Length: 187
Image 1 (cartoon, one colour):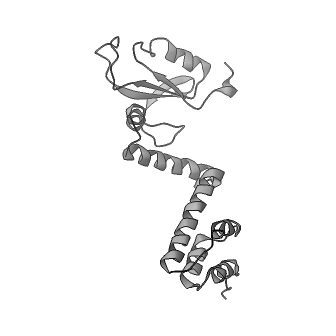
Image 2 (tube, one colour):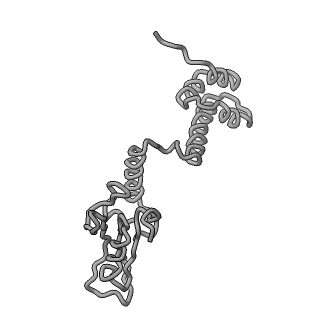
């Protein structure tokens, strides 16, 4: 195999054959940086009773695999958390929290955040705009159906400025004027 094309992680699920007998040595020889071996919670009829469920993380160091407690590819994600995520029927709050934590660490290491993803940024902006629209409605400010689109055209106006404008304005037109106005410079 070409070492430049290897994935960051390979996942093996052992239902009935022990990957450690032959296959793990192949992954090691091919230079896979990290291999996860999961023995599922659900037992298959052919799985030996001596195999407990769980996940083992193997990382390559100096050409040899070493077993570690947490992933290098997904920093801080522990073997127990990965096993849980792979074996639960739906994503639990515990798994969601672990993924959020690991994603934040990975983003910080790469200098990125949620708003660097165009789809996520779009949905976050939509949510922020909904909060501003709710504030306008709560204050009894009449708005037109065109306002959400006009808010999207405001570009990089911070949501804090939009919210301040929503709390100070007396009309939709005044809201848009306050959003578009340059903030006063201090000093």
